[in-house]
Amino acid sequence: MTKSYILHEIKDYALIAVGVILYALGVTVFMLPYGLTTGGVAGISSVVYYVTGLEVQVTYIAINVCFLLVAIKVLGIRFCLKTIYAVFLMTFVLWLLQRIVEVPDPANPGQMMLPKLIGEEAHFMACVLGAIICGIGLTFCFENNGSTGGTDIIAAIVNKYKTMSLGTVIMACDVVIISSCYFIFHDWFRVIYGFVMLFICSLTLDYCIRRQHQSVQFMIFSRNYQKLADAINNTGHGATILDGEGWYTKSERKVIVSIVRKREANDIFRMIKQVDPFAFVSMTDTTGVYGEAFDKMKTSNAKGVKSRQIVVYATNDAALVAEAQRVLGDNFDVRTLTDVGCDTSQPINAVMNDGIAKFKACHIKKFYGFDSFAKADDGNFVVVQGNYDALEYDIHEDVSIEQVKNLLSNNGKKKA
Image (cartoon, rainbow, N blue to C red; front, top):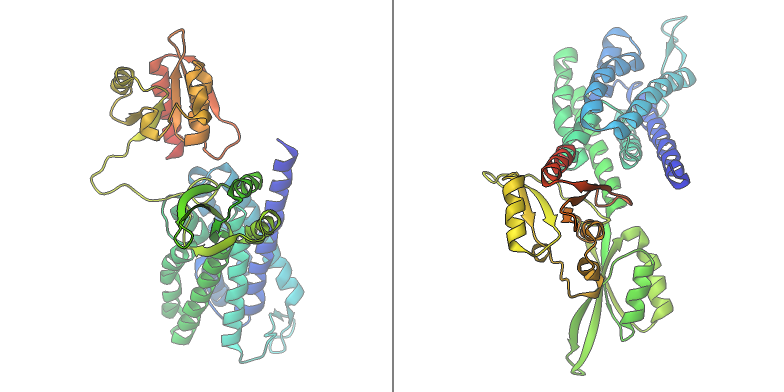
Protein backbone atom coordinates (compact mmCIF):
# COMPACT_ATOMS: atom_id res chain seq x y z
CA MET A 1 0.00 0.00 0.00
CA THR A 2 1.26 3.46 -0.91
CA LYS A 3 1.55 6.33 1.53
CA SER A 4 -1.17 8.29 -0.27
CA TYR A 5 -3.55 5.31 -0.02
CA ILE A 6 -2.93 4.97 3.72
CA LEU A 7 -3.50 8.68 4.26
CA HIS A 8 -6.70 8.51 2.23
CA GLU A 9 -7.96 5.61 4.34
CA ILE A 10 -7.11 7.43 7.58
CA LYS A 11 -9.04 10.45 6.31
CA ASP A 12 -12.05 8.24 5.47
CA TYR A 13 -12.14 6.71 8.94
CA ALA A 14 -11.72 10.10 10.62
CA LEU A 15 -14.57 11.67 8.65
CA ILE A 16 -16.80 8.63 9.25
CA ALA A 17 -16.17 9.17 12.96
CA VAL A 18 -17.30 12.79 12.61
CA GLY A 19 -20.47 11.60 10.87
CA VAL A 20 -21.16 9.00 13.55
CA ILE A 21 -20.75 11.56 16.33
CA LEU A 22 -23.13 13.99 14.60
CA TYR A 23 -25.75 11.30 14.02
CA ALA A 24 -25.52 10.05 17.61
CA LEU A 25 -25.79 13.65 18.81
CA GLY A 26 -29.01 14.13 16.85
CA VAL A 27 -30.48 10.96 18.33
CA THR A 28 -29.36 11.49 21.95
CA VAL A 29 -29.94 15.24 22.34
CA PHE A 30 -32.92 15.90 20.08
CA MET A 31 -34.82 12.65 19.43
CA LEU A 32 -34.86 10.55 22.60
CA PRO A 33 -35.59 13.29 25.18
CA TYR A 34 -38.64 14.43 23.22
CA GLY A 35 -40.02 10.97 22.51
CA LEU A 36 -39.52 11.31 18.75
CA THR A 37 -39.24 8.40 16.37
CA THR A 38 -37.61 8.25 12.98
CA GLY A 39 -36.87 5.51 10.48
CA GLY A 40 -34.14 2.93 10.31
CA VAL A 41 -32.56 0.97 13.11
CA ALA A 42 -32.36 4.16 15.17
CA GLY A 43 -36.15 4.41 14.91
CA ILE A 44 -36.68 0.78 15.88
CA SER A 45 -34.23 1.15 18.75
CA SER A 46 -36.03 4.28 20.00
CA VAL A 47 -39.38 2.47 19.96
CA VAL A 48 -37.90 -0.35 22.02
CA TYR A 49 -36.39 2.25 24.35
CA TYR A 50 -39.74 3.99 24.90
CA VAL A 51 -41.56 0.72 25.56
CA THR A 52 -39.02 -1.23 27.62
CA GLY A 53 -36.39 1.29 28.73
CA LEU A 54 -33.67 -0.76 27.01
CA GLU A 55 -31.01 1.69 25.88
CA VAL A 56 -30.91 2.32 22.14
CA GLN A 57 -27.36 1.12 21.60
CA VAL A 58 -28.25 -2.42 22.69
CA THR A 59 -31.03 -2.84 20.13
CA TYR A 60 -28.99 -0.94 17.55
CA ILE A 61 -26.00 -3.30 17.64
CA ALA A 62 -28.18 -6.43 17.78
CA ILE A 63 -30.13 -5.54 14.63
CA ASN A 64 -27.10 -4.29 12.74
CA VAL A 65 -25.24 -7.56 13.14
CA CYS A 66 -27.87 -9.13 10.88
CA PHE A 67 -27.59 -6.35 8.28
CA LEU A 68 -23.80 -6.56 8.31
CA LEU A 69 -23.93 -10.21 7.28
CA VAL A 70 -25.68 -9.05 4.09
CA ALA A 71 -23.27 -6.15 3.60
CA ILE A 72 -20.24 -8.43 3.72
CA LYS A 73 -21.52 -10.42 0.75
CA VAL A 74 -23.00 -7.64 -1.41
CA LEU A 75 -21.08 -4.42 -0.82
CA GLY A 76 -17.53 -5.70 -0.67
CA ILE A 77 -14.87 -5.82 1.99
CA ARG A 78 -13.89 -2.14 1.86
CA PHE A 79 -17.43 -0.87 2.38
CA CYS A 80 -18.06 -3.59 4.95
CA LEU A 81 -15.00 -2.82 7.06
CA LYS A 82 -15.93 0.83 7.32
CA THR A 83 -19.56 -0.03 8.05
CA ILE A 84 -18.52 -2.39 10.84
CA TYR A 85 -16.28 0.37 12.19
CA ALA A 86 -19.14 2.89 12.01
CA VAL A 87 -21.68 0.57 13.63
CA PHE A 88 -19.49 -0.30 16.62
CA LEU A 89 -18.36 3.31 16.98
CA MET A 90 -22.00 4.42 16.87
CA THR A 91 -22.85 1.92 19.61
CA PHE A 92 -20.10 3.32 21.80
CA VAL A 93 -20.88 6.99 21.08
CA LEU A 94 -24.60 6.51 21.79
CA TRP A 95 -23.70 5.02 25.17
CA LEU A 96 -21.13 7.74 25.90
CA LEU A 97 -23.39 10.67 24.96
CA GLN A 98 -26.19 9.35 27.14
CA ARG A 99 -23.80 9.14 30.07
CA ILE A 100 -22.62 12.71 29.40
CA VAL A 101 -26.05 14.27 28.86
CA GLU A 102 -28.25 12.43 31.37
CA VAL A 103 -29.33 14.06 34.65
CA PRO A 104 -31.13 12.76 37.76
CA ASP A 105 -34.86 12.21 37.21
CA PRO A 106 -36.75 14.32 39.79
CA ALA A 107 -39.87 12.18 39.40
CA ASN A 108 -37.99 8.94 40.05
CA PRO A 109 -35.28 9.31 42.69
CA GLY A 110 -32.19 7.25 41.97
CA GLN A 111 -32.86 7.09 38.23
CA MET A 112 -31.43 9.12 35.36
CA MET A 113 -33.14 10.83 32.42
CA LEU A 114 -32.22 12.66 29.21
CA PRO A 115 -33.03 16.38 29.62
CA LYS A 116 -34.92 18.53 27.11
CA LEU A 117 -32.13 20.96 26.44
CA ILE A 118 -33.98 23.34 24.10
CA GLY A 119 -37.21 23.67 26.10
CA GLU A 120 -39.96 21.49 27.47
CA GLU A 121 -42.40 21.99 24.58
CA ALA A 122 -39.92 22.45 21.75
CA HIS A 123 -40.81 19.19 20.03
CA PHE A 124 -40.93 20.63 16.52
CA MET A 125 -37.63 22.47 16.95
CA ALA A 126 -36.04 19.27 18.27
CA CYS A 127 -37.47 17.40 15.28
CA VAL A 128 -35.97 19.86 12.76
CA LEU A 129 -32.56 20.25 14.43
CA GLY A 130 -32.20 16.54 15.07
CA ALA A 131 -33.08 15.67 11.47
CA ILE A 132 -30.60 18.19 10.03
CA ILE A 133 -27.77 16.99 12.26
CA CYS A 134 -28.53 13.33 11.48
CA GLY A 135 -28.63 14.11 7.74
CA ILE A 136 -25.24 15.83 7.85
CA GLY A 137 -23.83 12.91 9.83
CA LEU A 138 -25.08 10.42 7.23
CA THR A 139 -23.48 12.51 4.50
CA PHE A 140 -20.06 12.25 6.15
CA CYS A 141 -20.47 8.48 6.33
CA PHE A 142 -21.69 7.89 2.77
CA GLU A 143 -19.20 10.31 1.19
CA ASN A 144 -16.33 8.37 2.75
CA ASN A 145 -17.47 4.86 1.77
CA GLY A 146 -19.08 4.06 5.09
CA SER A 147 -22.53 3.66 6.59
CA THR A 148 -24.22 3.84 9.97
CA GLY A 149 -25.78 0.47 9.25
CA GLY A 150 -29.44 -0.50 9.20
CA THR A 151 -31.48 0.76 6.27
CA ASP A 152 -28.43 2.76 5.16
CA ILE A 153 -27.02 -0.58 4.01
CA ILE A 154 -30.17 -1.26 1.98
CA ALA A 155 -29.90 2.22 0.46
CA ALA A 156 -26.25 1.71 -0.41
CA ILE A 157 -26.99 -1.66 -2.06
CA VAL A 158 -29.73 -0.15 -4.23
CA ASN A 159 -27.60 2.92 -5.04
CA LYS A 160 -24.77 0.63 -6.15
CA TYR A 161 -26.86 -0.75 -9.00
CA LYS A 162 -29.54 1.87 -9.66
CA THR A 163 -29.52 5.63 -10.25
CA MET A 164 -31.65 6.42 -7.19
CA SER A 165 -30.80 9.00 -4.56
CA LEU A 166 -29.77 7.66 -1.18
CA GLY A 167 -32.33 9.82 0.60
CA THR A 168 -35.19 8.46 -1.52
CA VAL A 169 -34.24 4.84 -0.85
CA ILE A 170 -33.92 5.43 2.89
CA MET A 171 -37.29 7.18 2.96
CA ALA A 172 -38.97 4.29 1.15
CA CYS A 173 -37.48 1.77 3.60
CA ASP A 174 -38.45 3.79 6.67
CA VAL A 175 -42.09 4.67 5.95
CA VAL A 176 -43.26 1.32 7.33
CA ILE A 177 -41.17 1.70 10.49
CA ILE A 178 -42.59 5.11 11.35
CA SER A 179 -46.17 4.16 10.47
CA SER A 180 -45.99 1.17 12.80
CA CYS A 181 -45.45 3.53 15.74
CA TYR A 182 -49.15 4.35 15.79
CA PHE A 183 -50.08 0.78 16.66
CA ILE A 184 -47.75 0.97 19.66
CA PHE A 185 -48.42 4.48 20.99
CA HIS A 186 -51.81 5.33 19.36
CA ASP A 187 -50.47 8.86 18.93
CA TRP A 188 -50.70 10.46 15.48
CA PHE A 189 -48.53 13.39 16.55
CA ARG A 190 -45.63 11.02 17.18
CA VAL A 191 -46.10 9.52 13.70
CA ILE A 192 -46.30 12.96 12.04
CA TYR A 193 -43.15 14.17 13.81
CA GLY A 194 -41.44 10.97 12.71
CA PHE A 195 -42.29 11.62 9.06
CA VAL A 196 -41.20 15.27 9.34
CA MET A 197 -37.88 14.17 10.83
CA LEU A 198 -37.42 11.53 8.12
CA PHE A 199 -38.27 14.01 5.35
CA ILE A 200 -35.87 16.69 6.59
CA CYS A 201 -33.09 14.16 7.17
CA SER A 202 -33.50 12.81 3.62
CA LEU A 203 -33.52 16.29 2.09
CA THR A 204 -30.40 17.23 4.05
CA LEU A 205 -28.62 14.06 2.92
CA ASP A 206 -29.53 14.57 -0.74
CA TYR A 207 -28.64 18.27 -0.67
CA CYS A 208 -25.23 17.68 0.90
CA ILE A 209 -24.34 14.84 -1.48
CA ARG A 210 -25.52 16.76 -4.55
CA ARG A 211 -23.45 19.73 -3.44
CA GLN A 212 -20.37 17.52 -3.13
CA HIS A 213 -20.86 16.06 -6.62
CA GLN A 214 -22.15 19.15 -8.42
CA SER A 215 -20.25 19.95 -11.59
CA VAL A 216 -19.97 22.93 -13.93
CA GLN A 217 -19.30 23.21 -17.64
CA PHE A 218 -16.92 25.83 -18.96
CA MET A 219 -17.12 27.20 -22.49
CA ILE A 220 -14.05 29.33 -23.13
CA PHE A 221 -13.68 31.52 -26.22
CA SER A 222 -10.04 32.52 -26.60
CA ARG A 223 -7.54 33.25 -29.37
CA ASN A 224 -4.94 31.63 -27.11
CA TYR A 225 -6.91 28.40 -26.99
CA GLN A 226 -3.95 26.02 -27.35
CA LYS A 227 -2.13 27.31 -24.28
CA LEU A 228 -5.39 27.38 -22.33
CA ALA A 229 -6.23 23.79 -23.28
CA ASP A 230 -2.74 22.66 -22.27
CA ALA A 231 -3.09 24.47 -18.94
CA ILE A 232 -6.44 22.76 -18.27
CA ASN A 233 -4.91 19.36 -19.10
CA ASN A 234 -2.02 20.10 -16.74
CA THR A 235 -4.54 20.55 -13.89
CA GLY A 236 -5.75 16.99 -14.44
CA HIS A 237 -8.96 17.91 -16.29
CA GLY A 238 -10.03 17.21 -19.84
CA ALA A 239 -10.60 19.78 -22.56
CA THR A 240 -12.30 19.52 -25.94
CA ILE A 241 -11.78 22.03 -28.77
CA LEU A 242 -14.83 22.89 -30.88
CA ASP A 243 -14.79 24.80 -34.16
CA GLY A 244 -16.75 28.04 -34.30
CA GLU A 245 -17.09 31.25 -36.26
CA GLY A 246 -17.42 34.79 -34.96
CA TRP A 247 -20.41 36.06 -36.89
CA TYR A 248 -19.52 39.72 -36.50
CA THR A 249 -15.89 39.35 -37.56
CA LYS A 250 -16.58 36.39 -39.89
CA SER A 251 -13.41 34.82 -38.54
CA GLU A 252 -12.68 31.35 -37.20
CA ARG A 253 -12.94 30.83 -33.46
CA LYS A 254 -11.99 27.91 -31.25
CA VAL A 255 -14.14 27.05 -28.24
CA ILE A 256 -12.77 25.07 -25.29
CA VAL A 257 -15.27 22.91 -23.43
CA SER A 258 -14.31 21.49 -20.03
CA ILE A 259 -16.36 19.97 -17.20
CA VAL A 260 -15.04 20.11 -13.62
CA ARG A 261 -16.33 19.75 -10.10
CA LYS A 262 -17.90 22.95 -8.85
CA ARG A 263 -15.45 23.16 -5.96
CA GLU A 264 -12.64 23.33 -8.55
CA ALA A 265 -14.21 26.16 -10.59
CA ASN A 266 -12.19 28.91 -8.92
CA ASP A 267 -8.95 27.11 -9.83
CA ILE A 268 -10.01 27.11 -13.50
CA PHE A 269 -10.92 30.80 -13.35
CA ARG A 270 -7.52 31.64 -11.87
CA MET A 271 -5.80 29.64 -14.57
CA ILE A 272 -7.82 31.37 -17.34
CA LYS A 273 -7.03 34.79 -15.91
CA GLN A 274 -3.33 33.95 -15.79
CA VAL A 275 -3.15 32.62 -19.37
CA ASP A 276 -5.67 34.88 -21.15
CA PRO A 277 -7.40 37.56 -19.03
CA PHE A 278 -9.33 38.70 -22.15
CA ALA A 279 -10.98 35.33 -22.78
CA PHE A 280 -14.79 35.17 -22.96
CA VAL A 281 -16.00 32.54 -20.48
CA SER A 282 -19.38 30.95 -19.87
CA MET A 283 -19.92 28.69 -16.84
CA THR A 284 -23.13 26.70 -16.36
CA ASP A 285 -24.26 24.21 -13.72
CA THR A 286 -24.76 20.62 -14.88
CA THR A 287 -27.42 18.39 -13.38
CA GLY A 288 -25.51 15.18 -14.05
CA VAL A 289 -22.08 14.25 -15.36
CA TYR A 290 -21.27 10.60 -16.05
CA GLY A 291 -18.06 9.08 -17.30
CA GLU A 292 -14.34 9.25 -16.61
CA ALA A 293 -13.51 10.85 -13.21
CA PHE A 294 -17.18 11.62 -12.58
CA ASP A 295 -20.21 9.52 -11.64
CA LYS A 296 -20.93 6.09 -13.06
CA MET A 297 -24.09 5.37 -15.05
CA LYS A 298 -26.24 2.93 -13.06
CA THR A 299 -29.20 1.67 -15.03
CA SER A 300 -30.57 -1.64 -16.20
CA ASN A 301 -31.00 -2.77 -19.79
CA ALA A 302 -34.21 -2.13 -21.66
CA LYS A 303 -36.87 -4.78 -21.16
CA GLY A 304 -36.20 -7.81 -23.32
CA VAL A 305 -32.63 -6.77 -24.16
CA LYS A 306 -30.00 -9.33 -23.17
CA SER A 307 -27.00 -8.00 -21.30
CA ARG A 308 -23.72 -8.74 -23.10
CA GLN A 309 -20.21 -8.04 -21.87
CA ILE A 310 -18.36 -5.72 -24.26
CA VAL A 311 -14.77 -6.67 -25.03
CA VAL A 312 -12.40 -5.26 -27.64
CA TYR A 313 -10.21 -7.39 -29.88
CA ALA A 314 -7.27 -5.13 -30.75
CA THR A 315 -7.60 -5.56 -34.52
CA ASN A 316 -9.74 -4.49 -37.45
CA ASP A 317 -9.58 -7.87 -39.16
CA ALA A 318 -13.25 -8.90 -39.49
CA ALA A 319 -12.39 -12.59 -39.90
CA LEU A 320 -10.36 -12.69 -36.67
CA VAL A 321 -13.12 -10.87 -34.78
CA ALA A 322 -15.78 -13.22 -36.12
CA GLU A 323 -13.77 -16.26 -35.03
CA ALA A 324 -13.22 -14.77 -31.56
CA GLN A 325 -16.95 -14.02 -31.31
CA ARG A 326 -17.73 -17.65 -32.17
CA VAL A 327 -15.40 -18.98 -29.46
CA LEU A 328 -16.41 -16.50 -26.76
CA GLY A 329 -20.12 -17.01 -27.38
CA ASP A 330 -23.27 -14.91 -27.20
CA ASN A 331 -22.54 -13.60 -23.70
CA PHE A 332 -19.87 -11.34 -25.23
CA ASP A 333 -20.03 -8.48 -27.70
CA VAL A 334 -16.62 -8.56 -29.42
CA ARG A 335 -15.76 -5.24 -31.04
CA THR A 336 -13.02 -4.07 -33.38
CA LEU A 337 -10.79 -1.02 -32.95
CA THR A 338 -12.99 0.95 -35.34
CA ASP A 339 -16.12 -0.04 -33.39
CA VAL A 340 -14.83 1.76 -30.29
CA GLY A 341 -13.50 4.78 -32.19
CA CYS A 342 -9.81 3.87 -32.18
CA ASP A 343 -8.45 5.49 -35.33
CA THR A 344 -5.03 3.91 -35.88
CA SER A 345 -3.99 6.76 -38.18
CA GLN A 346 -4.03 9.21 -35.25
CA PRO A 347 -0.70 9.82 -33.47
CA ILE A 348 -2.19 9.03 -30.04
CA ASN A 349 -3.06 5.53 -31.31
CA ALA A 350 0.30 4.88 -32.99
CA VAL A 351 1.00 2.05 -30.54
CA MET A 352 -1.67 0.00 -32.31
CA ASN A 353 0.65 -0.24 -35.32
CA ASP A 354 3.73 -1.38 -33.38
CA GLY A 355 2.71 -5.03 -33.25
CA ILE A 356 3.25 -5.57 -29.49
CA ALA A 357 0.10 -7.27 -28.16
CA LYS A 358 0.50 -6.15 -24.55
CA PHE A 359 0.82 -2.48 -25.51
CA LYS A 360 -2.23 -2.71 -27.77
CA ALA A 361 -4.50 -4.24 -25.14
CA CYS A 362 -3.30 -1.84 -22.44
CA HIS A 363 -3.86 1.14 -24.72
CA ILE A 364 -7.49 0.15 -25.34
CA LYS A 365 -8.14 -0.29 -21.62
CA LYS A 366 -6.49 3.00 -20.66
CA PHE A 367 -8.02 5.25 -23.30
CA TYR A 368 -11.30 3.53 -24.19
CA GLY A 369 -12.22 1.76 -20.94
CA PHE A 370 -13.22 -1.65 -22.29
CA ASP A 371 -11.63 -4.95 -21.31
CA SER A 372 -9.48 -6.00 -24.26
CA PHE A 373 -7.31 -8.72 -25.70
CA ALA A 374 -4.71 -8.85 -28.47
CA LYS A 375 -3.01 -11.65 -30.37
CA ALA A 376 0.77 -11.96 -30.09
CA ASP A 377 3.13 -13.18 -32.81
CA ASP A 378 3.31 -16.65 -31.25
CA GLY A 379 -0.46 -17.12 -31.58
CA ASN A 380 -1.23 -16.67 -27.88
CA PHE A 381 -3.19 -13.78 -26.43
CA VAL A 382 -2.77 -10.98 -23.91
CA VAL A 383 -5.82 -10.01 -21.84
CA VAL A 384 -6.13 -6.69 -20.00
CA GLN A 385 -9.03 -6.10 -17.62
CA GLY A 386 -9.95 -4.20 -14.47
CA ASN A 387 -11.52 -1.00 -13.21
CA TYR A 388 -11.28 1.79 -15.79
CA ASP A 389 -10.41 4.37 -13.10
CA ALA A 390 -7.67 2.21 -11.54
CA LEU A 391 -4.02 3.11 -11.91
CA GLU A 392 -3.07 -0.49 -12.67
CA TYR A 393 -4.90 -3.27 -14.55
CA ASP A 394 -4.85 -7.06 -14.48
CA ILE A 395 -2.66 -8.27 -17.35
CA HIS A 396 -2.61 -11.94 -18.41
CA GLU A 397 -0.07 -12.96 -21.04
CA ASP A 398 0.46 -16.13 -23.10
CA VAL A 399 -3.11 -17.40 -22.80
CA SER A 400 -5.23 -19.33 -25.30
CA ILE A 401 -8.52 -18.06 -26.69
CA GLU A 402 -10.38 -20.45 -24.34
CA GLN A 403 -8.50 -18.96 -21.39
CA VAL A 404 -9.42 -15.51 -22.68
CA LYS A 405 -13.08 -16.51 -22.36
CA ASN A 406 -12.62 -17.80 -18.80
CA LEU A 407 -10.73 -14.70 -17.67
CA LEU A 408 -13.30 -12.31 -19.15
CA SER A 409 -16.21 -14.35 -17.76
CA ASN A 410 -14.77 -14.26 -14.24
CA ASN A 411 -14.19 -10.52 -14.48
CA GLY A 412 -17.78 -10.01 -15.65
CA LYS A 413 -19.06 -11.85 -12.57
CA LYS A 414 -17.01 -9.57 -10.32
CA LYS A 415 -18.47 -6.48 -11.98
CA ALA A 416 -21.99 -7.78 -11.56
